[in-house]
Image (tube, rainbow, N blue to C red; front, side):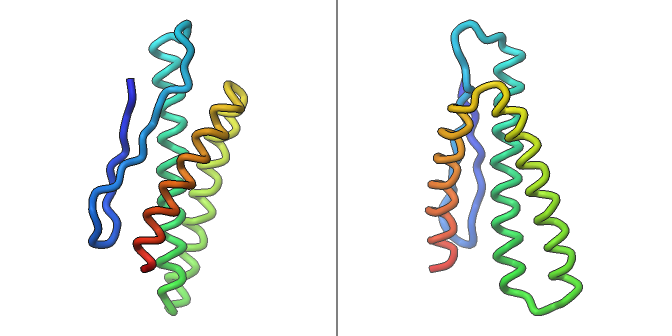
Length: 114
């Protein structure tokens, strides 16, 4: 079972981040879903953080920048909480997932900033 996150970036085509369960054949369906939820939480938090950072860079409004800083902090906390839980279950899978996530962000944000 694979899940995909679909998201749009500023005026470009649909982007997809593939979530693959960090599974062995002995893993229960419930555990597999739990791992995918952790990956989804990491991906969502990371992407939300990046878009907030871009908005932060684009605004001069002091209040808005403070709100964005707080939001980015919350995103980081959620990301690292999910990462810690996932690391306890399969540290190598976390590294693979983060590598894929970084590629997706680089592709998307490069197009956004171009």
